[in-house]
Image 1 (cartoon, rainbow over the protein chains, first blue to last red):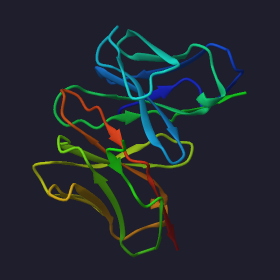
Image 2: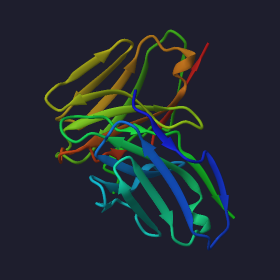
Image 3: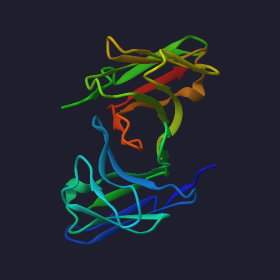
Length: 113
Length: 113
């Protein structure tokens, strides 16, 4: 079974802090994704990466950056946290080629005070 | 611009009856469609998918129907069970070597005993 692990289930930070969310997958997937889930808005793509050191902006990248130094690890960075970044953050991974579903971690519920 | 729409935020069904969840899309380039189930405080779990070359895919109690001319897909759960109570997201992608998914806003299904 694919395992996508997010380092924290719950996180509370203050406005202006730099926040790191970590995600690790154990299935040698090339592609990794960061989403945020908000009520009534579904899942929205923040950033994705299709290879080590490669990254692409998703639909809502403002205020975020990412890092992918190793294939199995994809980090989401909030450069200066703001209250409107309070959300559920979900990491996913998938293989390249064919119709492959994305596999998700359990999410990090982040509160910015 | 919401490319994938789930117009019913919630659905209530009695145990043993059929649950029908609906999803509409606008992008005619979408060629792969998925349904995910999400319990509170967990990440989405892949449920079933369908390629645009098919109009039906079945897996146990779950069947997905695709009507390309209407740009509509639906998920049928028969018979519904209380454990099916969750939020269901439909998602779509236009093949680009890997699956960059566009998600709907979700439908909360409640199956009562």
